Image 1 (spheres, rainbow over the protein chains, first blue to last red):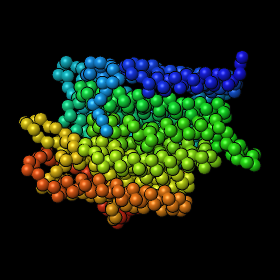
Image 2: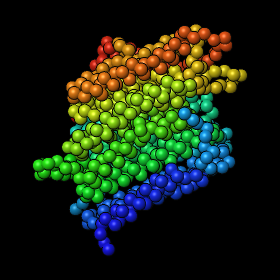
Image 3: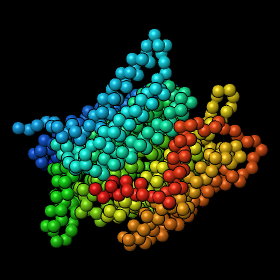
Image 4: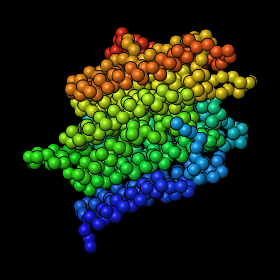
Length: 101
Length: 499
C-alpha cells in the first residue's frame, strides 16, 4: 500500500495529463491554464512523496515554496488572459493567428 | 544556537538589499505623485527612468567598494565570489546603457506606465539572485522572480493585439518550462536527498568512484536532462525555440532589447554553475545533449532566417544561430571553453546594443508629431544617403556579427572554434564554420539593401537622438577598437571565468 513506486507513477500520469492537455486542446485558453496548474500539482505530489520516503523535511519545504509561487504565477496568467480578452473579444485557441512563420 | 541571519549575510546581500529598498521608495514616489490632483497627474516615466540610473550608479559604488572574499551566505543558498562581483559590475553598466537606449523610445511609443522601470529594477534584482545561487531551491525561486517580471513586461502594452498575443504565448511556454525544471529538480532531490551544489558534487564523485563499470542512475540522468531542457527553453535554443520568433515579433521593441541582452548571460552563468559545481562528473552525458542542441540551433537558425521579411523575426532567428555557437563553447568543460563562452556573450551584448540603438532610430514621420517605428527589413533602404553616419555604424555592426576580421565578432568566433579544436571535436567545428559562412549572407544582404538598392520613394527618418547616439557610438567604437587594445574586456572576462 505504501510503496514509493505507486506515488511516482501517479505523479507521472498527472504530469503527462497536464502536458497533453496543453497540446490536444481545441477549446479555449483557460483549459491551458488549468493544465499548467495540473503539472505544478503533480510536481508538488512528487516532492511530498520524496520527503516521506527520504525522511527529510526539505521536500515539504520546497513543496510549500512551489505552491506559493505557482499561485502568484496563475494570478499573473489570469491577468494576462483578461488583457487578451479585452483586445480580442474571445479566448478561443483556433483564433490565435496573428503571427506566422 | 542556530542564528537565522548574521552580519555576513547582510554584508554580502547589500547590493540587492539596496535595490529592494530603492524599488519600494520609487514605487511610493511614483504612485503618490502621479495620482495627485494638485500636481496635475504628471507622467513620471522619464523621471523614474533617470532615478533608476542613479540607483544603478549607487549599487555600482557598493559593488566596487565591497571586498573580494568568497563565501556562501543565507545558510548555503547563495554564494559570493570575485567573479560574481565583476559580472554584477558589467551587468550594471550594460543596464545603464540599456536605460539610455529605451528612455526616449518608451516615451515616443506612448507607453506612459511608470512601472516599466520598476519592473526593470526587479529584473536586475532577479538577475543578481540567479547568478549567485548555490542550491536547487534558490535556482527555482530566483528564476521565478525573473519569469514573473518578464511575463508582465511582455504584455505591458495593453492596447496592442500583437503584444497581448505574444505575451500570452510567452506565459504559456514559460510556465511549461518551469514545470519541466521542477520535474528535473524533484527527481534529483528524490534520488539523492540533497539540494546543495557542493553536497551534490561530493555525492556524485563517491557514486562514480565506488563502481568499476560506470552505470549512471537513470533518475539522476533524467533529472539532468530535464533541467537542461528547461534552460534551453529559456535560451530559445533549438529544438525548444518555438516561442521566440512570435514573442520577438509581437512584444514592443524595448522589451525585446531586454530579453535579448540580459537572459543569455545569466542563464549561461547559471548553467555553468550548476553543471560545473554539481554535476561535473556526469560530463560525458550532458555533453551529448549540448552538442545535439548546438547542431540543431545552427542548422535551424540559418535556414529559416533566409526567408524572413520582418526585422524582429529575423533578429530572433539570428539569435537562435548565435545560441548554436555559444552552446558549442559550453560543450568543452574546461576553463578555456567557459572563457570563450563569456567572451562571445559579451561581444554579442555589445553588438545587440548597437543593433537596437540603430533600429530604434528608424522612426518615419508620417504626419506632424506622428511617428511610426520601422518593421520590415526593406525599410532600411537608402539609409546611406539620408543618414550616412548611422548607415556606417550599421555596416560595422553587421560586419562584426557576420564575423569579418578585424572586428570583434571575428575574434569571438575564432576563440570558440579554437577551444573546440583543442577538444578534438572536428566535425562540430567544420559544420559551424560552413554554417557561419552561410549565415554571413543574410547580414550582408541588409548592408546591400542600405547601400546598393535603389527605390523611387525614399523613406525619411527622424534623426537619432543624443542618448541613443551615445549607446551606438559606444558599441561601434568598442567593436572596432577591440583589435587594437583588447585588454579591458579580456581582463574582466578572465576574472569572471577563472575565479
